[in-house]
Image 1 (cartoon, rainbow, N blue to C red):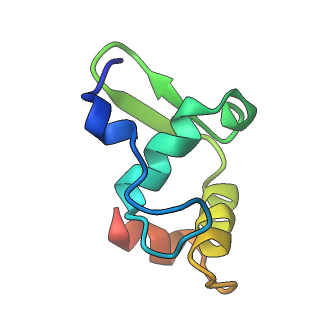
Image 2 (image 1 turned 45 degrees about the horizontal axis):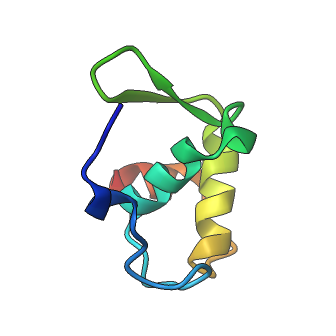
Length: 77
């Protein structure tokens, strides 16, 4: 899957709370270490969240919201 270069450039520094969810998802999809958590599926830009609780936990860490859960994250998706 290829996206425009601008899609991969962080709009803010790593660890910043200014990141948008779609960009965070792209970051996870790019890193092999998270393939057990989230991965590309098929040839049409689709992805599957294999461990929704872990994705929510990571998003909560990134946004400094320790009580983040998948229910809250899924509403943002």
